[in-house]
Length: 224
Image 1 (tube, rainbow, N blue to C red):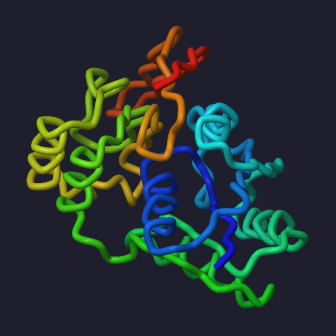
Image 2 (image 1 turned 90 degrees about the vertical axis):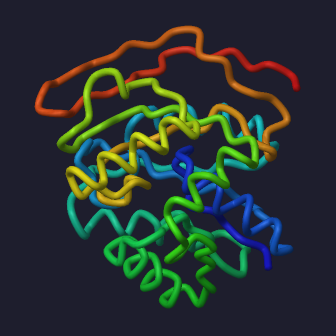
């Protein structure tokens, strides 16, 4: 099918695109919503501006819009983005969040589009290991859960990082994939990218109470 991908630039949305393409689908559009609410229930906000560079790296058309991030009303922005696209369906990176998947499914039903969720109910540890093994370069851009410290900000997702996430899950009952908003990520390189992104300027903003952001203010695009 020809698909539009709900795109945040984080690991789940990028890997869902990768899996959908492996299944034979074509990604016609990347659809990104910029929410002014950092506590949005639907949308990734940390470093959302990187989606412009990531779309260039993938050679895909990016369509974006703005919303205030008001709960429930923000869902309509997906519909506004998708309704004029000539596609057969939508791919999203939901793993276990019924809140997000149910609302995207409702929009798809209203627009008569198929919903493709290649990560739905995947084994979480296996998924994270696969990201590393497939060559996805991922950094943690935000944390917001008990057990995280400032050292996690900007940390690369590798096997040691996954091991440490498993320790946090055992101790603090977090989702190791960040499905509950425990952490957010940005993809700097992956098999889909024709160019990788090197971070040239960044800043850690630690807020205390196990929460903070790794703000990426500049990147350099490097040919692979």
